[in-house]
Image (cartoon, rainbow, N blue to C red; front, side):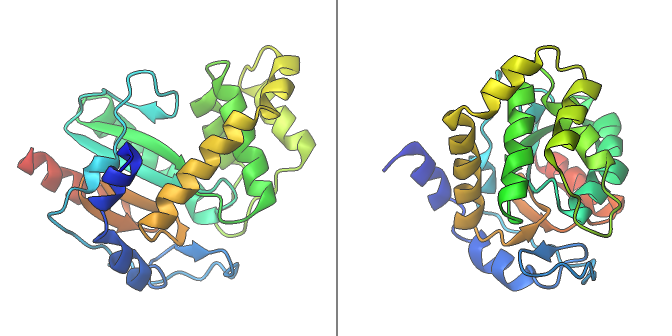
Length: 233
């Protein structure tokens, strides 16, 4: 059994949790649902199983924020086109960074869950190309700043290139070459496979240590879950 298979074996319990709750989440938006209607803001679930086994905790991970040894890891399954991912990224995530990441209590690990197809993959690969020049989170934040929290964001080629320039990607020729690197697409595919294996069918979806949180929940939901995990650490 490979290391990734062993990790997934530890989180088999999440599949029914996410499959059942995915249609009820406030802000959860499936691939076939572009209405933007919100669901139940209380749709979170808990388990004692080792969901944190999926945390990579790599010190060289350009797609992570926070101390590698932080007691709580929040894995984020997101799509740049998802309006509710943009809502979380612009309204909730900065407060979590200020309160917990900067204090060494929380680590954020990004996963690309490109449920909205080719255009989502295109901008996700571009973000990873920006990471080759140390600008992943800058690209991530700028891309989400274009969202309105209601409709899927569009990322035509000119917008992607403008984001890269605006966030300080200095070598645009290299950026273009990196976007063609098949390894970046392979990374996207691996993230998508991981999310699919544990039952993620809408975005955003989160694993806070062993606790799944579904949708762009209010800040209090995240802080209460993080505090509960800190109490157990």
